[in-house]
Image (cartoon, rainbow, N blue to C red):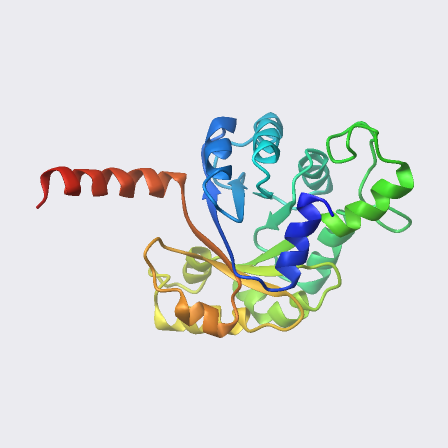
Length: 252
């Protein structure tokens, strides 16, 4: 079983998985984090300056450390999905998924074959640089690529059960900050938002996860059904790490 297929299997099995966002488009950052013990890392191409070339080099670094690499893509257009998957990543996190039909279209654009939407090139990293046969690559691609739909809008919240039930959606991921903003709240710890998060995390049919702040007690979310946790980013690690070093050095 390949690394990416193993991640997909672990996700589907609702194993407790811990990862973080990567905001810096340099392969060395991904390489270091790949050695950190994280179960996965997510390149944040929605909010950080990751172009196709940056994702490609970071994918090489992640593979070198045997760390599954996901990309939060900036949009769900077919060409964006194709470009990211050709880099050989473990899967995509798609922001602002609002309906089951949108989720089904996303899944279709990750798959090959009749009625599907993914274009094929045999010399990509995803295709092992033509070392896989066409039939083998088509079969493996469906078993390797994870599709994670981000729920962060009122429409997405209203439809989360239907989205979770779409064949090929491996997980729902709660975008807590945007969900709070979309409901007019300025605190993603607000009680109303917390309850909505818990509702989504209890969805049937797909694994579920969410972003948590470093140091946050995640026991509530585990009890609600979450199994995929994204805690902070390398920016958070650097900022909090320096604060801890200063505290240890000088106290007060």
